[in-house]
Length: 305
View 1 (cartoon, one colour):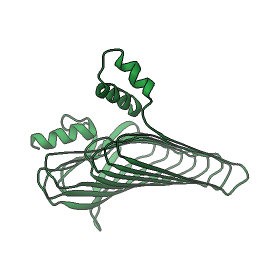
View 2 (cartoon, helix red, strand yellow):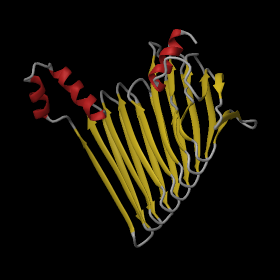
View 3 (cartoon, one colour):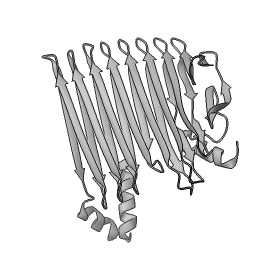
């Protein structure tokens, strides 16, 4: 890897070299490094572009890294990655994509990640998206995440996009069996003329299933964001979605909730708030010696932390 690729890898996966354990590093539409472990096997798909990750039952305290980096003009790809998590496993999966654009020709990465999480398994899934480069070409990412949680399974999804992506459409779909739990923490910041759309659709099918979807976003300059959340309670369950956004300059933000109860004991809640930075917050920080711009930065960073 060259220095640009190493920097992208650090930004999206906090990696300063080859990780320990199971990993697959994809660069400019091909794998440039892969390793399996005793409990985690990574194999290439034979019918389409992508990989299958097989995690043995009862695997504990292991991580899988599958970052994607791109710095070659004109690349446009669709990748399919499937995760098969065995019963009782407890693992961390680190994904994400970084794009460096240095020309007027854009780059695009679309990916569909599908999770099959078996009974009692636990997954923490971390996904970061990042763009950079002084080229005028668009940096485009369209990630789709599909989650199937079996009885008693738990998945926490932490997704972050705070710099450099010109256009993104992020789709997450999940269906939950009895006593399964799905938790999402999303952080997004857009600037310039960037466009970001996120959509969540969760089916609470099992008795005792639950979901908590929380989005924090900041829209600056002339950027536009759209947040959609659909939760359907099809059994005795609990569902909560929350969109909290800061709007600045000439940006636009839309939050569209949809909660549907198809069972008498479905307990569903949606919260949404969009507003500018409060003036008293700016004044308080400026009295401590910060400029207005520095105060805004501190507030935004704290909000997205």
